[in-house]
Image (cartoon, rainbow over all chains, first blue to last red; front, side, top):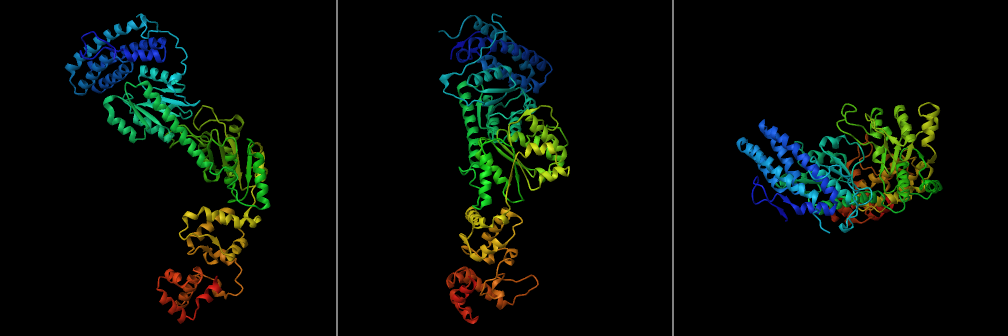
Amino acid sequence: MTETRGGDSGPPSVPTLNRDRLHDIERNVSREFLIEIVALFLSDVALRLERLSDAVKAREAKRTTSLAHQLQGSAASLGVLRLRVVAQRLEELAEQDDWGASDETLARLIHEFQHVRQALATIGSEPLVHE
Amino acid sequence: MPFTLDVTLQSPTQDPSLGIAPTVGDVVALVEDDVTTRLLTRTWLEAAGYKVKEYDSERAVREDTGPAPTAACIDLGLGEQSGLDVIRYLHERDPELPTIVVTAEREVETAVAAMRAGAYDYLTKPVDRDRLLHSVRRACERRRLVDRVKNLQSELGTNPLSGIVGSSSAMVELSRQVERVIESDVAVCLLGESGTGKELVARALHRGGPRRSGPFVAINCAAIPASLQESELFGHERGAFTGATQNRLGCFERARGGTLLLDEVGEMSPATQAVLLRTLQERTVRRVGGSQEIPVDVRIVCATHRDLRSEVDAGRFREDLYFRLVVYPIRLPPLRERCEDIPMLVVHFLEKLRTRSPHGVRGLSAEALDALARHSWPGNVRELENVIHRCVLACRGDEIGLADLPPDLRATAAPAPDATPREASEDLLGDDDEVVPLRELEQRAIRKALRLTRGSVGRAAKLLGIGRATLYRRLAELDLAPDTVGRIVA
């Protein structure tokens, strides 16, 4: 697995991105498609994070777990590994009604998302597949 | 942000390295609420040559009233809805639909529940492209295989006319007429009394025609109340009327690409006749409560025991519909007009019932056959088949005799020239108002056992449930000789 490490928001053993996954998408479809789906992912996650923040603030366990769960699936599809792990942690904490830890984890999730944006930005400037 | 958002996605081309070749027309339903995963999965499937119908919720699936897909790929974690509900709903609509479920890694228990609910395969997130395409390909292949088996089952017998039994001139002419229109789409109307085999001929037209790989659907208009005819024929939308809890395909949509038999079309209500006429003109159906016009490509065969022309004259059947349906009428002869076919039909039914015959019935005595030929057969071939079925169950030997026939048929039989009236009747207990003395009853039972076993005392004793010596003793006491009994009765 090709890894992109960086940031301190997630477990250090988990890389930010699985570049092999992104590489496969580019190779199997096209570079243009990869760029499109990454853009879609970032805009979708930004929206989900806003809803997640509202749910955590409102201490709505069911909505928080559901949104965190969806975020995991989305991240998994593009190989955004650490964001997925942090979202999974938030889902577990909300299930346990541990809102103190949930607030901290939400902050980590938002921070990790900023890091993911930076990591994925490089995709627009350099091809993953070298001819 | 360094990348452009409004990139035009190039048309994906099929990857030849995959070795995956979906059949043209394979449609995969993709049920996924996450937009990123949905776009990725759809693109992979389309690049592999599949047509994809996307749904972001259970509601979206239920709202789609279009044709069923070849296979479905369903995310089990559909927000707060359950993907299991989607599986159940899709299987209600199409029990053979192969469904592939997608779950998170830690939801294996849910995947197991989905498999129990009838899912064909399951994948865990993140979905691997090759694994997905492999599973979808297998699902589509399975679907085609199931459809093929069904079609083969309905096509049993390579000769489409093989089920039409008879060598009489009436049946030869019938076969000729069927062959004349079998390859065309011309509207055939089968005219004949009940039980003459109208559905059999309709199936022959389907099996021998260009639509043989499609479904054959039959609907008996006489068996459906007028208020339900439209719904049965054209389907309905959920909420169209009280009790319409879900969308339902009608006969026209179920017969798409195949043949639809409208049996007893003369019993169709005037309202349904009007809708049927419009459907035949437009070649589209609109479900009850729906607004969408759904194209249908179906061969119509209709059948009736009535004189439809007279029904038109009496104002009970629309003339414009009559001309649409009765382009090529074929008359099916009643059995009484082709008595010479009875022996061949009997052999056919005995062969058909062979596995259900407890004693391996192989034939019919000359007297029994004579009785069958004398009967008027108001119920036609269906009545004959039912009689043979009853005889096979009643017969204790390997040949159906006069005594095995139902009483009304025995009554029409000519009495044996050397039999006494009592001997001609094999009913052991006599008529309802007659009490048969025990001694006489015993004699009759012994006579019958010896007749059925062709005079074999050992086998007759076994049938009677007594020892061979006892039977010899009783024969002597009753002054009966086995060979005499056999000769008189057989």
